[in-house]
Amino acid sequence: MRAGVVVAANPGVADLAVRAEELGLHSIWVNDTPMVHGDPFVALSLCAKATRRIRLGIGVTSPALRSAPAAASGLASLNALAPGRIICGVGTGNSARRTLGMQPTTVAALENFAAALQDLCAGRSTEYREGDRVRDIRFLHTGAHVNATDPIEFVVAALGPKAAAVAGRRGAGLISFGLLDPTAWHALHDARRQAAHGTFREPDSHAYSYVVTALHLLRDNEDSDSDAARDATGHLVLSLLDFAADKPAFAGQLGPDQREAVRELLDRRGTAATARDRYTKLYPNYLGPIAPQDRDLVLPSLMNSLALVGTRDDLRTRITALEQVGVDELLIQPVIDPPTEMAQLAELLA
Image 1 (cartoon, rainbow, N blue to C red):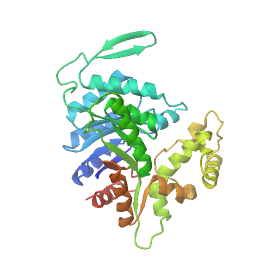
Image 2: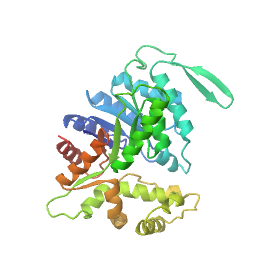
Image 3: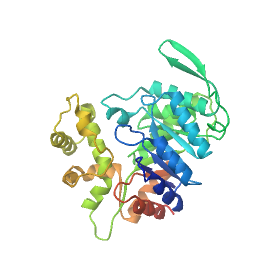
Image 4: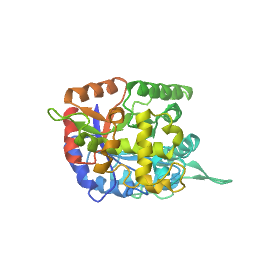
């Protein structure tokens, strides 16, 4: 299985990209969550100029954040800086929209967006709509501005069959956040395969599957719920609790201890699931390092389902199970010591 890393945009991102390339990682991705993180196109431009081989991913953008012409221009501009190394992840904008206090977009809008990006980034014209006005658009500039010749890889963010089907119809890959259940991945791949068959599209050998998680390699005699393990994985756990606090219907599907953690989180943040401005209290430092006083919210049950915590043998067993159901690349999102965690990932998958 290949290895990669997901980071937030910041001025030091190019140094991480260089280190990731030195370690032999396949890709580095930057989040697109505007109200919490920096701009991924700016960050990946720095990475493109500092590296030569590693692939550069947007993880992920959405039609609720950017118009297709604006997103395509950014992608094709990156492709001019790093020809053939660009990966575009697209999704409904779940966390990126919720950090604005808004709902994600629809799967139908996602599919239209993906189709338009694929057309524009390949130099083709596409249909563009604003209200009742529809126009055919394409890149009007030529030369060094954009690269619509070298292919851009597209992946669709999916946790269920509807988004996976979009990937199948568009000949795209999949990316999923915290999905470490091989059975769930089997279902996603089935949905993508069936949708692709319905379009009579030839199977795409470059439609890869990526899973985003966190990694903590236990030291000798270290407990799996140690402070260090909670710190390394807590950003993923709290992202799920944030989502549950923001979406009571989802919280109702959790176990009793997990629902209690959601209630405690809301209390600590001084808000409620019905408060109009709850997003301003829940999402600051989203996917960033957790505060020590929140370690007790990082429940072992959620750590185990969302992240990879264990000995080398434990982790290799879980990674092998994912590889056997068709996951091509393991992406870690480190927040405590990215260089060390990237080195551990590279060693695990060597």
